[in-house]
Length: 269
Image (cartoon, rainbow, N blue to C red; front, side, top):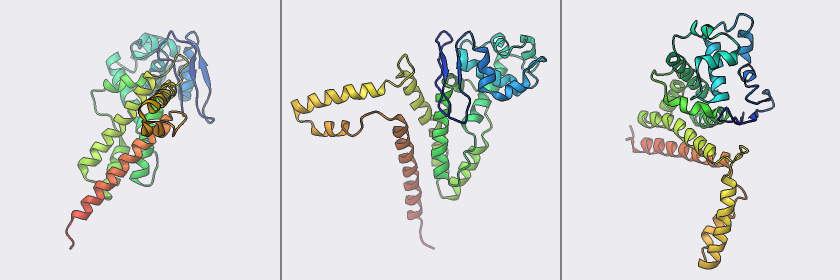
């Protein structure tokens, strides 16, 4: 699932691109109310004449509102407006915006760290890293939300993955660091991708690479820098998916090497 969403409410159109098994939604700011129902289909069943009927529906509406207008513009009134209910309906389920943000954080983390159903820790770790990156690219306005949670969020898959690593002799300290780095690597790539997007929402890194290639050719002709020229000639475009996969794959290889070194250093019985 890949989604591009305008990060400011004033930008239009608010475009969302999903895979074939997802709905396709295009909203302008005027039609942003539809986004809460379109992005979270479960919300439609909970929002009707009597308004939102569960706390989860309120949280989903708040996350969809954040997608539409950004976290800075999130208010209880705005959530109610886009969910098409009265503000007091929201207060039936949350006591304050602070409580709502905590619940949104927990819901976002649950989505980022949902179980990818992989048989090994290696495939599970790689899938998890890509899952976090894809989800944040789909919901770029969630990124600042991740810094707001003050309460630990439940992550059942984290414990499962740590258990798989322990069973394969990955040191507990390295396994814990690896889980933290899964999020850090994904967020780092997402922030870079968002910074280098052009006004049309496309990555500008390809254009930067092409400019570097032209510079490299000129430098090679002047300084005989064949190594730089050969490197930049390898790919016609800067593929961020491939770049991220290379980073994650190499990290997994490093963990496997640490495990092998640990097993090799153990005395024979």
